[in-house]
Image (tube, rainbow, N blue to C red; front, side):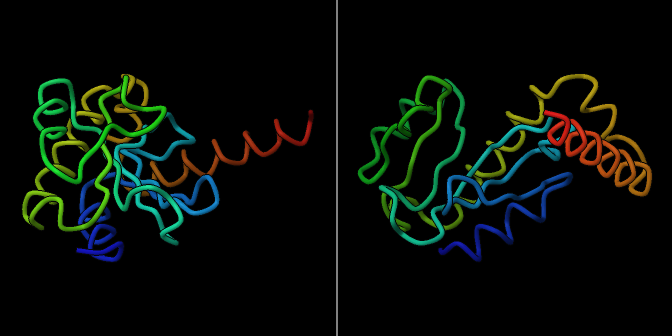
Length: 144
């Protein structure tokens, strides 16, 4: 397992967007963040962090996953039930894929109704809505 395989898995899910945050993390969002999407996973692109993959796991899985050697609570996000894999072999590839799918489903289910309504639009209308929102955010930033 590696960053490229994680990207393939995440980007194959519906309505997933990606951004680079904090200088060296590739962050995956259920829905574009500019329309209210929320992150469900991130990878460390340059290996300078303390882990290779972080993801939301929900309250039920959180304590189970922490019992696995090589998995620890994610700093600053453990209260929201995020865990970090310290190395790629902490879980088998199929388990990682299943956990990422579960993370996406948990976060998608918690999206605001307005965001889910936007994501239900046909692809062209959704793309237009995202462009308009980004344009509005950019204009708002310049006004400050």
